[in-house]
Length: 291
Ligand SMILES: [Zn+2]
Image (cartoon, rainbow, N blue to C red):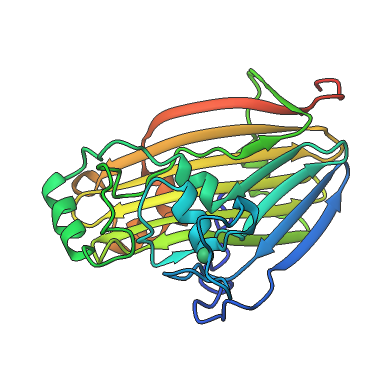
C-alpha cells in the first residue's frame, strides 16, 4: 500500500538528470490553491568548479556569483555531495507575500557545525576517500560529515509562528482523494562514498482538502544507523496557516527488525523508527486571524 503520509511516489522517476548541462534554465511551475501559491523550481546540478562564463572574482557581487561560488562563499562545508542544486526549490507563498522556502543552501546551513559523534573511525575513512574533493584543500573545521540537517523551512515576509496543540491528522491524509498538484524536488544527495546515503528531498501534494508538504532528510550509515528528520506542513483548504511538525526518528540498524529493502527505503522505514525529538508549531499569515 502506498504510504500517503510521506508521499512515496517513486522518487527516482522524477529525479533530475545529473547530465543536464549547466546552461539549462531552471524549470518553474506555480500552482495556486486558496490563499497559497506553490512554486516548484527544478534546476541543474551544481558543478564542481566555477560555472560562470567569465569566472567569478573577488569583485563579483553576491547576487551575481554562480552557484558553485555562491556555495563556496556562503556554506561552511566543502562541496562534496555528488548531487546538489542551489537553484532548485519548493516555496509556499501567501497572497499577502509571506513565503516558506525549502532549498539546499538553507538546509546545508542547518547542518551541525560540530563534528558528528557518529562512528568517528568510519568518518575518518570516508574523509580520507574524499581528500581530493573540491574544497578539501581549504582548511575546514570538523563538521557533521553526514550532512544531517534540522532545517524546517525558511520563513520570510509577513508570516509569524505560534505555539499550538493542534496536530496534523495523518490518518486523514491516508484517505485517497484527487491529487490536484504533485511535485518533488531533490536538494542534495550523496552516497557517503558507498557507506550509505544522505539525502534531502521536499515534496508537495495539493488535494481538495488542503496542501501537504514533506521536507525530509534521510541518513543511512550502513551497519550503523538510520535517521530521518522530517518536517511536515499541512494547510487545510481555505486556511491562512500551516501546521508544522518536525521530528527526528532514529534507530541503530542492529535494532531494526526489518529487511534491508525496508531500511534503504526512506518512504517505508520512517514508520519503523522511534521518535527521538519532536517540535510542533503553526505558521500564520500575519494579517489573518488564527483559525
Ligand atoms: Zn563562479
